[in-house]
Length: 420
Ligand SMILES: [Zn+2]
Image (cartoon, rainbow, N blue to C red; front, side, top):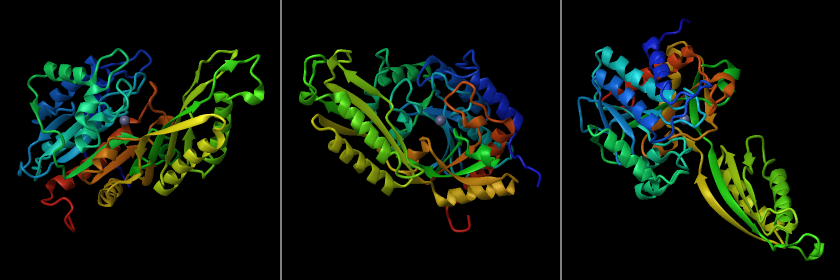
């Protein structure tokens, strides 16, 4: 079956590459961190393309960018479609940007087709998805969905001491013509296209990933407390050595939690030792745990297991475990997933169901409206790297599937009515 592309693939690719010039790195990647001058420049470029097509640009208190195509009923909850424009410091051209540009292309195609949406259709770029400059990320979608308060977000500082609040005020001051939307309005649905950031689609030679959900994640900070002492004089049996306790705990955690099943992801990624001197018995170890699993029951059990193992292997040291992130796995809306699979089939593109191993803004949108994601392959599964690459044909195919789903939702009086 011949592939059918609804959208203008050349325009989409040309614009995506033009966007990648903003914050371009010598190695071919992108450094366009949240609320930076480069992100403001990217906003200007995208706003220019949107206004050319008749969309109006607005923002909210959290620095999310909204590009609105007015529908027949301005009061009806709008359709949201987008991703993010910020990148990692050594990021690529596609993570986030592909989703925003595919969304814009889908809407421009819709306008050029002479369609009139029953409700507003809004292309969105969420503020600080990456969390590289201001951690943790997904601030814009968290503020929009109510998962995190705007005051807590504004207080976060980057390594140079600049707060999100200061950077946000600067962004808004540099774009004084933007109108303001309230923070967290009701939406009819949310769609997001993204590169997979993993190898599954490429390996399966599949172009469209119908994302079933995002795997759950828990993070912890663990502090092991012992006693400092002289490495030459303190008898071995009298020691409360925090590194020895950490070593027992880490070995047990890897052996028991890291081996729960084939889907578990267990990582101790950061360890700090105090006083970190060669001839002093260490008194304190602080380490991080990142735990992920698609099944919430397994994730919860593993989380409880971590606490139990830490307490079992810490003595004679003391241990304190602080949970940081507790994000359960979510299921994306089955009606939207079905529409994505059907659109891929209609357009002659092979599709498969796929679980997202990485987090996305859609996780937070799924709490407040029906939401779904479309994945496209990226070369070697590589992402958050400067050589991140997606095939132009795959970008076009994903955008075209997105366009069909969006059009069908936008033309329906009730997007999820039976038979719609
Ligand atoms: Zn992303």
